Length: 193
Image (tube, rainbow, N blue to C red):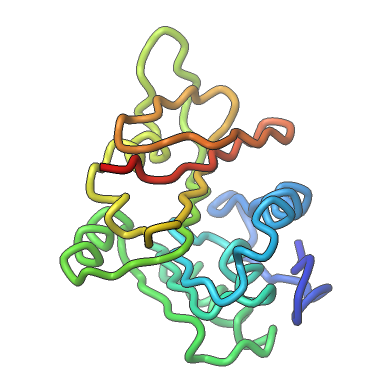
């Protein structure tokens, strides 16, 4: 796995061995960032379920002004911080919170933080034929406060697997679904009040 574009293009990202992390595949990352185009420049990005840090690091490499990575595993967070250092990203452009995503979202809303992009590619959920998804992706969609973290023209990019059929909740407007193999990414914005 590597950085695909921007100032750190070609850099190999180091990730812990084993099944504890499922990095967003390079082809999926490339399609996401091609879709975002210039929107990434100077963007404030919230990277939820950071895992390998691939989405946040790609954002920084391509010109995001700031990335806040949220990762529950201290082990994974250490790898992400090492990758930030290895990619020569200035420290002030990246911040790491080693916490569960859901309490952090509540804290950020209370602090009235806003971001131009929220990216989340959480661990995949189970197959959910004839029942509502219980996945982490669905739990994010179910949070009515999450849209408050987006700037006026902000986007929420949410990954899930094909077998996990998520329900788009009323506070999100779906712009498109990007499909690559078993990986789906929803491009969403808050519904205007």
